[in-house]
Length: 111
Image (cartoon, rainbow, N blue to C red; front, top):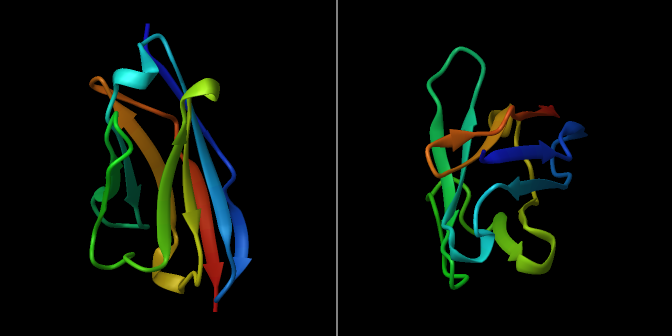
């Protein structure tokens, strides 16, 4: 079955950087569009960005210029590079594809 495993979260100070990874198995990875979502404490899950099978990306306005999505088809992995982190970026970050969610990885940005 489809499995997604996120990693790379942690505690970082305002202005810092983190790179999240999402390893995908159980699908033909190179054909899949992968989504990154996040869920801040006490709030609903929200879209962060998307990377299509051919590598095109889209990100929401709140992270444009700070977050970058990329993929490595040889490793079945999608990355979310997060720079200039702000306290309001604090959330559990999830990847999603094929009607399946990963378990999430927690990012905490201290002020």
